[in-house]
Amino acid sequence: MRSSFFEFNVAISGTFTARANLETISHNTANAATAGFSRQISKNRATEPLAVNTGAGMVGTGSEAYAIERIRDEFLDMKYWTQKCVMGEYSGKMTQLTMLENIFAEMSGDSGLSALFNDFFNKASDLSTTANDQTYRINIVHAADALAQSINFNGEALLKLQTDANTEFAVIINQINSFGEQIVSLNKQITIAELDGSGANDLRDERNRLVDELSGLVNLDATERHDKTYVVMINGYDFINHNRINPLQLVERKPADRRNPMDADGLYDARFTTNNVDFDIYHPGLKGQLKGVVDIRDGNGDAGNPATPTTRYKGIPYYMNKLNGMVRIFALAIDQGLYADNTPIPGVKGHANGYDLNGDHLGTLLFSYDNGPTNGALPPTFYTDDINCLNFGVNQTLKKEPALLNCSDDPTTGESAYNITKGMMLVNTDSSIFREGKLNDYITAINSEMGIDARQASDFEASYGDATTMIDNQRINVSGVDLNEEMVKMIKYQQLYQASAKL
Image (cartoon, rainbow, N blue to C red; front, side, top):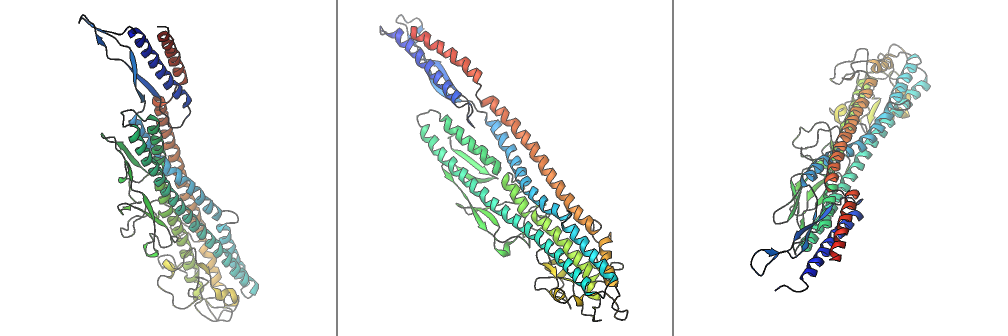
């Protein structure tokens, strides 16, 4: 037999249901501007009916709000993560390439490397007409020294930029670990909160937000299995298995493990702590800001050596090699009168083949490197490996005794002969000295190549940024809070509450 208060209990259930819906609407409205928040809805249903005493039919017992569900499209989340990791890659590259551009832009400026080369050749021209004047000999040595110091400065700037990129690499690895630890903590909280079968909606939103942030750092795959365990893999490696994390650790390279001969000391690799597995930072599938910084820090344009794998991207080592190539070819031409393939340059005798003011032939080099040879027999790697943009300099002996500068290729022609210095001037105008053409053409080509790389990174960053924004807007259309819609619902459930209250 039904209670005398049965109808009142039915009406009360209606107020409870309306109230639950109003609370959900209030929560949505309060979080309309909260990053990562997913709109929630209260799921309503009729409560279990009772059979009529006569056995014919059933009578309703009211309603209930049995669950609060968040509106989320997992497919859009996966699309967003895919786009954001690529955007993160090119965003990271763009930052570093801008600094690289600044270094090389100074090389071709009015007071940069091109101007110093021109000054050196102008001093050679002045000396060619006054070979017996010590002042002009001092001038050309000073011009050569200023040129060498500028090249050293640019090389050191590149090395400093590589060190900065290495620091950023460490920061990204620490950020990945930090996001991972926060996700694991949320996984534990979600498990506890959902033991009674309810949904930990706000905790799940926060977890999704962290995965969004993580996806900008490295490509990932995040899935929730049927048993509600949450698994995150980064670049195909196990990273999070619900309440366990396999964090990354930084591994400092030893000098013998350098990927490029002129890499800065202390560059980092990464390894998983738990299972001691190396994280392949050169894997072709790697994306995100981690990929961007690795490409800039280690990219030498050639990943063909399996013994020291690296990336084919034109990063700092690539442009440092370009600077090395310029120095080596220039020094070979000035001192030996030879092209890069060791064939003679027409009209260029080479400083080491000349005679000084005293008529002596000492085989003296104009350019050498720190503690390097100054004359005589040179090591076979002198112009290919030994001399580089960091150690390139003027022969210390010539800096102390400019009279040892070679101007003539024949001791019998007198002190005013200038065939050697005339040959130096030809190096500046020889269109075959570099594959790109003349010396200034080579510098221009480096800047152009850098500009193309930077423009490509900028275009990709903008393109993937637009795609990421578009997908995020789609997610907002699905999961975002529409205040107008919430207000309409609020009025609806206010009226339902009032009607139940009147009953």
